[in-house]
Length: 219
Image (cartoon, rainbow, N blue to C red; front, top):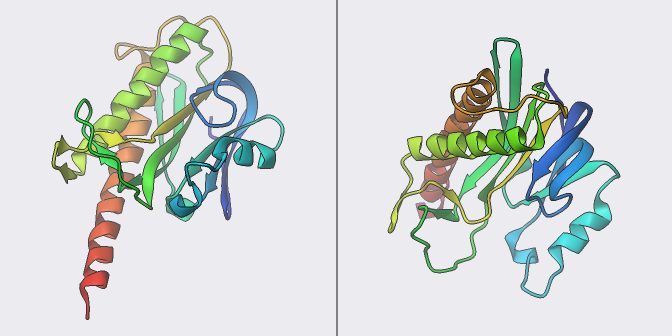
């Protein structure tokens, strides 16, 4: 089971195969909600001033039945990963920028950073309980961290493990499957799809960063 992904700047859309239960901490549609799509809205960090109501601004643009995330990363740089284990599928779509990277448990002083943040949309065909969906979310975040650390982005506090504004939206059919940990087919499929996607996307961001630095250094 895969979602349909379309790029229509400043939007990236992940249209789900059917209405599903989505779990996220997204600025629009957070918590458990029924949705047909997960959307990314590209925005400049310069526009997100402290007095700006970013959540209200995003919500005013969102179509019904969608979960929405904000990113300053070019939405055209999206990556995807797919895995299938024992009939359980997982499809991951992500935009990845690490300019505001953090090493977990060792926060850096606040700084503005364009082209930052990680936004992940994940859909699985596993019919999960709410508790199992929460467990699958933990696997998604774990796999994200492994993918980011593989890029070896060094900070003053250690290797980047994510960014200060990451977001994940995980979609599945509601059902009675109670477990989604690392010993399960669900956990393996989710982990494999996200790990592959985030490893490649994080490596691509490092290439972009180095090329951008070289460009700026030219007289």
